Image (cartoon, rainbow, N blue to C red; front, top):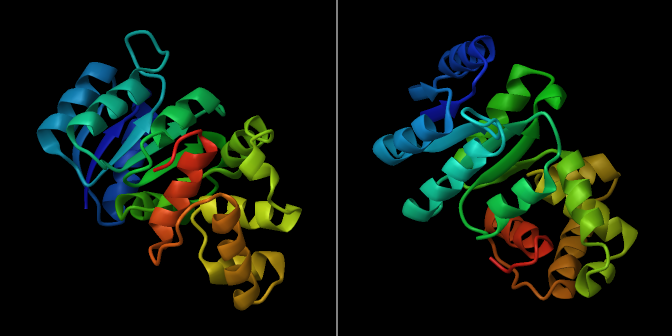
Amino acid sequence: MRVVLAEDLFLLREGLVNLLQAHGFEIVAAVESGPELLKALLDERPEVAVVDVRLPPTFTDEGLQAALTARRHIPGLPVLILSQHVEQLYARELLADGTGGVGYLLKDRVFNAGQFVDAVRRVATGGTAMDPDVIARLLASNARNAPLGRLTPREREVLELMAEGRSNAAIAQRLFLSESAVAKHTAAIFAKLDLAVSDDDNRRVLAVLAYLNGTRG
C-alpha cells in the first residue's frame, strides 16, 4: 500500500516511516512542508496520505489545505489527518464532500502501533478513523440541528462509534447490546437523518459525518 507522509518534526516523521514500513506499507514520499506535500500527492497519487495539519512555511493549515487541493484533483483520495488539537473547522472541511476515506487522529491519543496502523488501513480502504474527541466536538457543535436532535441518547452513542469506524459487532460489544439491536439503532439513525440506507458501512459512516458537517455526501 503506497503512502505519502507529511510531518515537519524529523524524529516523528522518521518514526512514522519506520513504523509503516515495518507493517508492509510503501512510503513513496515523506515530506515536511505544505508545498512538498501537494506536489507529492499529485505526482505519486498514493493509496493514502498521512498528514499533519500544521506544516511549514506558516504552521497554520498547510497540511490540510494541500490535502484538500489534492482531493479536488484526485476525487476520493484517502486522507488521515494527525493533529495535536481538535480543529473543528479542519474536520468539517475534510468531511465536506463526503467521499473517500477520511480520518482525524489526535497525536497524543494514539497509544500503540496497532491502533495507528489499523487506522491507516481503514482510511486507505475507504473507511473512517475519527478520534472520539473529534466526533464529540462535531456532534456538540451541531446539537441544535433539528434532525440530529431527533436521535435518542443511545442512537447518538451508536453514531459516535460508527464514526470511529467500528463494526456492528464491535459496537454491540462496547455498548453491551446484541448485534440485532445495533442494526435496529443504525436503521433508526439513518431514517431520522433522512439518509438512504446502504449495504456499504464505510459509505454510510461517511454520509453521516458529512451530514453532521452540514452537507449530504
